Amino acid sequence: MPIKKTALLLVLITSLLIVCCRPDKQPIPDTPEPIDDSSVVVDMSKVPYKKLSDYRFFKGDLKNQQPNENVLPFKPASALFTDYALKKRFVWMPKGQTAKYVADDKILDMPTGSVLIKNFYYDHVQPNNTIRIIETRVMIKKDEGWIFAEYVWNDAQDEAYLDMEGSNTDITWENENGIMLNDTYRIPSSVECHTCHKSNETSLPIGIKPQNLNNDFTYNDGAFNQLQQWINTGYLDNSNLPSSIVSTIDYSDASQPLELRVRSYLDINCAHCHSENGHCDYRSLRLAFSESTNPDNMGICVMPDENINDTLKYIISPQKTSASMLFYRISSTDPAVRMPLLGRNIVHQEAVEMIKEWINNLPPCN
Image (cartoon, rainbow, N blue to C red):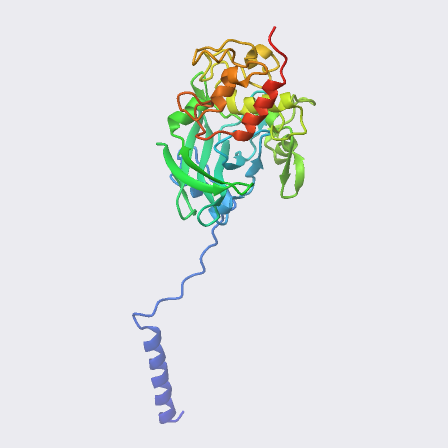
């Protein structure tokens, strides 16, 4: 090779080496490993986590509430009223674990590691007419029993953080009738959670009873009976599940018998306290759906446990809402009077009208 060409080649090689080895030149990174977000993470030694996202209950943007694999949505036939908040509920269980039937009106016997997730949100929130998720309540079944984990969502709606202290937040929204409503929404503390969920001072879920799940729910692939879907998912052992279950109904369904609607409403909204070993065990009312076939348990023509005023003759005074203690309490927003005691600041107008109609149609006391 001629000298000139050799020299030129050396110059080019040297130049390339200098460029490639410049200290400010960053090396090409290795291709990052894709993050596997398909698996829920529930480590019993570490829960409750500080952030809702740490569990990986949902895929994609957290606020979209798209359930991850085996995170199963569900909805009880009748829903607890919480100042008109909308709700999305989910259940997750460890692989290979199943819940067991106990009785129609008893919560399912859930395995250790089970998780119940309940999101509270409002639509058409002002001033921007958007969706706002306020809180996510999580119950986790540990070896020693159920624990609470309360997650409060941030303003950006991209994360929710563990907060068991309880707080208030103001909200204004437009309801389905175009009416603007305002509320100081209460996010419960751990003490408040336990008050409603306790039985003999043990914390328990409320809604996961066969009587509340023996109805259809619309999943992504169609509408199916929820108990059957739990079986199909491997979440429910059907070996001792009866062929017929005495079930609650949707109290908002005006086509259903009025008495069944009222009993279903009182069951999901009141029975957890007005039951044996519940917070209001000392009162005479027993409002579980399985117990409310007895008029005495419903308070019909039964003297109230306390005398708030002389006009309230009975807990339920047939054909006289003005003389009915129960009606007086559900119509009040006074914290010293209202029922339920916790979980609402405003009156559930539709339920008040339903119970008013029921009372006005009862036969008179003997």
